[in-house]
Image 1 (spheres, one colour):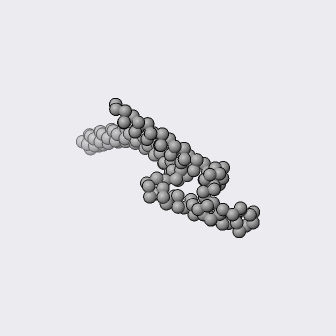
Image 2: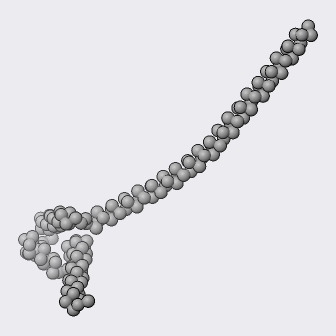
Amino acid sequence: MDRQFLEFWGNYLLAAARGQKQLEDLNQWISQGFSGFEELTAMFKKYYGLERPRNQDAGSTKVWQDAAADFRNSLNAYLNLMGMVPQDKYRALEQKNAALQKKVADQKDTIEVLRKLLAEKGTYQGETAKVYQDLVKKQAGAFETLMKNIAATAKEE
């Protein structure tokens, strides 16, 4: 391998690691209610016009919540544009997938049990047909014997 490739690749991986750290920090910052990372909070306040100290009254809280909701909506739209989904949606989809996989496995088990029962019933049905055929033969034999006996009795008389 040449030196330029190794230098390029090393710097690329370092940049990716920094980017990953920034994404993890952003995710944690959002999940903590837009607090805990002062640099991100300061940047958020600056760009959303919230630099003035927040009062604890209902109006300033609503402004903060609206800005946070707008930020989340814009982030979700951006992630969607990039072909990504937010973690909460991914986890919900993952749970739904797990539930569906369990349901499919249960249905496969049920189908297997029903197939076994059907195979067993098929055996019983075959035996039932054989028993019915034997019964018909016995009745035919009994009818033949009856007719012979009637004929013999009629000759005697």
